[in-house]
Length: 338
Image (cartoon, rainbow, N blue to C red; front, side, top):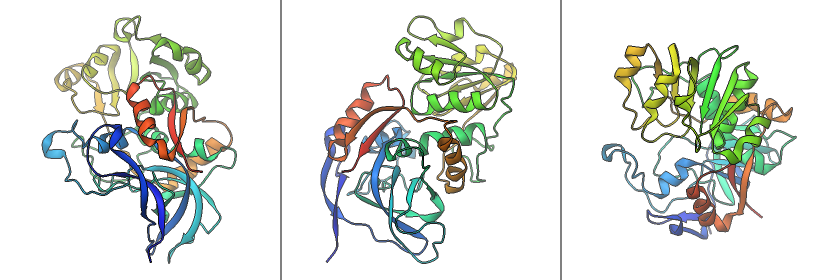
């Protein structure tokens, strides 16, 4: 008889209400995989896109549905069992990971559940000095920032452009982070500052104290003034928001500077960027246990801190997604088991 567990299941596309807390088969593990008892699961934008059926993507990019599925990519938990050929973790170890991303976008990576199977190569030991909630909030957001700003960590083809993304030097440079209070943004502020940049954070006014405590040297409240109207000669702009109007930041960047787009879909400023001598680049974040191990030391010693917007019981994933849809998030939303 198949052992069962509780999980959030997606049986159709739609709003938060389509997320159902129900019984599901506990996953089996193969060689090279690890079974983890999930203590906490991070909520990320791709989880919302999946729930919505990726309607924001061009029709030709939308993968076919594969119901039933369990969403979620980020998790922190405890190893229960290991498959053959696994030697980096053992039962009882506390671990964290971004699971099988991007992988098959329509299968779901399964972290919104009591148990999940994870390729051992994607796991790292959880930093000892942070709890499971903070660890679950880290992987996708911090790997995104790391792969944009420090090292991509792979040679896979870039789905967003014909050339490989290449991080740029940050020490002594001026970096503007748009959407600085969110999951990716607040970590981009910290990583850029750690690398020796002068950091300008753009967010709504209620986040000013938080972002200055996170390392921002300057703060711009976009609800009062448009950043592009008051700054210039920026070396790098990191846009963590996306949507229409991303090209407006080109006028703030010096010739030879760069614009990094976390979500590049809809960017229309290629010609202007070329005329101004500005590099516009993006990349697809990918699971990477080796990088999480490296980053873990910096979480352990407090160099980077994961801000938590809110936590929700696993059974209330629909409410967590509703919170995400409200916007103005400060840090990460996390689901908690137990």
